[in-house]
Length: 491
Image (cartoon, rainbow, N blue to C red; front, side, top):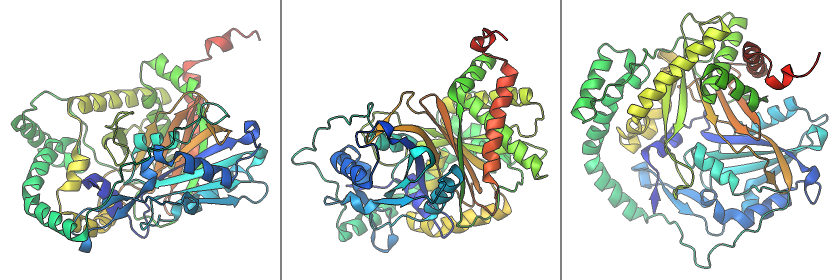
């Protein structure tokens, strides 16, 4: 049997009428090289049936504990019919990027059915140039960035010709949930032990007090955290973090159930060239691009704060290739973004300094506060309180302005049902607490593919943000100057 962790369950608790806690992605496919010259729903269903055993997360459904007294369990659906999870739509003419984004946003708004395995796929036909899009979503309680990528990888190939896949074992082990009476007995035992577990979690939480938004601004937060780390046997000197106080922006406040989506790409070679030229990481450049785009958008709307925005940056704690393929093992770095810096060059340097300090702090004391915070209260209380707490925080004191996520991907072409994957634009979660804007990117085959998700009550013109991201890339490339190859071309 396998029970959701406190962090996994938190993604369930975060859901409300206005928040759907699934992650997703839009793959743009070129079927020209596929044997059939097209990607059909039937072919996708056949591929899923053949490879379902390679992606065990897709066969699991939730089984709740009676009266919601404890976290749910996972149970494998042995006779799963994947056809129930695969849908097909066709865009009206002309089938351009704006129409695809609108269609995807509407699908992304819809909650997944908790009575079935928590995933869906939509094959979207009619895209310009003979292309096809595949939108796939899966609940965040099932996967994090690493496990989500590995789940999708089970369906992909290195050539247009699909690889041969070994069939599942004749007598596979099956994940089952306990019987209701057994669940209640274990819930009762855990409730007795919960105070002791909560105290331990609270102790570890206090050790990260200076890395937690809002809490880090409390008087004496750093001294309390240092004392807790010393008592806990981790007294090493850590870089001091800035006060993490998010300013008010249009991005923050209660969100609606509606979504808007935009997407686009920048050359990964340009990102790497900027990183090399200034001695920073690729992720530092990504964060700078986002900071520049946010500044430009806020300036356009006469809403630029006089201090840095504060972003949450998810960090995967799971390494690829681990046996566990379900659930979340992640933390977050909370970092200021120098949106208050006017000079592009100084903004880049400030972002590099900020990220280096945050990474040194994380390496010295990996922040576990996200998981600890999820486990302080009993599951039944957390399930009831989370949506209300999230909405209240968005009104009173937003802890962050947005989430920015960068997921590394393969740097070679991949194929799905024989069609080449041209790009993959990720999508994530919006909540009242984290704000009505989320920027996620995925590096794939020489490109950095962005997905910008927003609530229209917070950001109506989401395509402007995507445009500002691309303009910010041009700005950084201009700072570096022409590449050596370009310099060799005679004028």
